[in-house]
Length: 408
Ligand code: PLP
Image 1 (spheres, protein in one colour):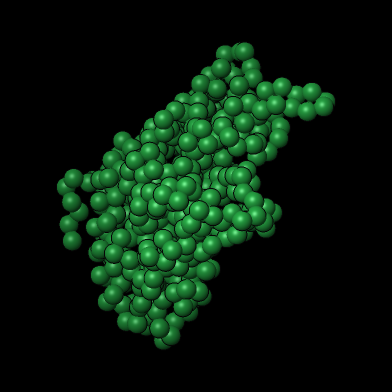
Image 2: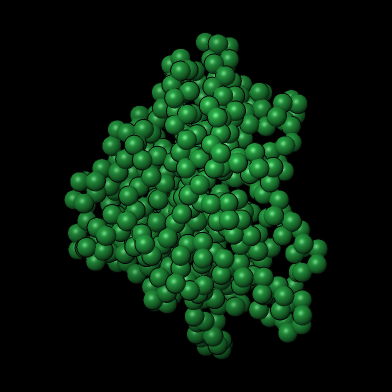
């Protein structure tokens, strides 16, 4: 299959130094684990390098030039993330360590009590399930789970049936990391709002696969991680509607999040500072700002269209591998292919693929309930990034055929 002319994947790949490093076997790296963490383009690496070499100081505190510059770069990153998500104002962007911390922030502060319900789906990453289990245990609220279908889509009627005036929050993935399912986020938001609930989307995979506009979706909160969208680890963001953020109490106490402190008590800064206690991950935030700007410049919809072509091609090629069964076959899917192969253990497959320079992930992908629902304990997962190619997928198909011959 030819690469489409509109998307120059070779030019995209050339921006990612890690992709041109051979593996220890001397074979070229076939990186199919972008859903776990994406590789980094040169601009992100260079921005962090420049910052650490010549621009570093603590932010928001110093009156001297270097601190003012670091503050400017940090706040510029917030502006870039705000643009990336379609936020009304940069003040709606709270930097966090990633999706996990962003969801924990809301779970720890969102007002819940006995009689209230939080609705999640059966396909959630543990990051969007365990924080709600903890919040419900702490507050006496009830966790309600909307089931998924055999193909891994949200069971729409069952979801609607679970909503009521008791529902205070719907917390769902935008895109499933384990099954690839793209959830109908705008419809979920309008159903949640119909019963007076707020809605949080776990966008860890959603931001990577197409343009996200939080206001167009109708979200109230949206969480994502930098490292999955070509930025660094240790940084991510929570977007929240400003009035909702302003109504939440602090998540952690410390420097920067206060208005005034006395020995008797303290008052809080406005969002986003209220939720950013302590010295933030400055270099990482700058790297994230550059990453989202670069990814936007690449064309998020063009990259998504390319990934959709790869997904269709990869799905077809994998079907030709003897005994392979795709787990997650929703008609609305992003570039995640999880599968099992009859009579072959996933760990053994992944090890043999690794010997051929092919990096895939194996296991439950932090979505044990979803795996259980699909009748498996785990899958082998190949996931696509903006730099993935037809050749990567051909290598995977051939590598799997070879591995199956050896292992059976
Ligand atoms: N949600 C989804 C859908 C994910 O794929 C992931 C990571 O794999 C997370 C949440 C957690 O992201 P992080 O570990 O970066 O906080």
